[in-house]
Length: 245
Image (tube, rainbow, N blue to C red; front, side):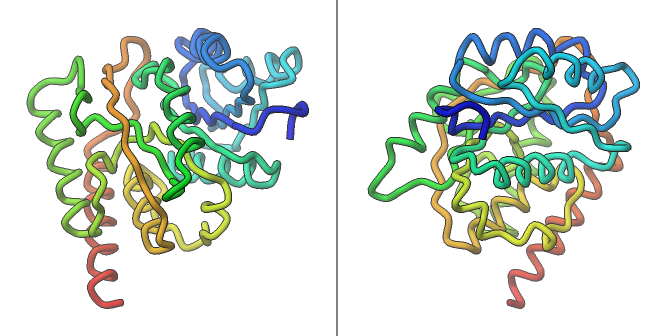
């Protein structure tokens, strides 16, 4: 583990986020100084990974993992989780690298998981779909689609949590160590639903805190129709496997 006191690692999976990453990292360290941060970059053509690598040489709390090619958001986050477990961090926070997730809610994520003792919490989700949560900047059709995919996940996977497709979460490392990451089928955006499903099978406990998700201002969204269809199909196959366990 880096330094002697940091027990939390924040993961940012990036691809062409040079417009956002430097300012986002500054904002994170200004909000929670006693954390380490890992950038997992898929060899971004815009130089995101090169910048993060150079910056990590100047900042002992910053690490950078460069993958050879773009190989799915889920795989990128798994690489980050494995890094965190190997380094023995106690808590792992994941958020998007485009300012969609409120950095000022990171302390609340950590406080919620750290202070829960009876019962202990394994995952705390920054949720758009609990009272106080919401979305800014999305058209009505996209909001309906997002609601639909979350309801779809709840019904097929038996998830009690409301926001299953969002990536803004804090995990307890000891719980993640119980997972077999090689069993996770999703490489793309259904990774977030599948991870909750796999953790639920390990009797993990969950909580949600409200956040307001803000659509990205700079850069280009990576999700597309093909990825969305893949996500729906994979959630369906997981739901079928659940019925026949």
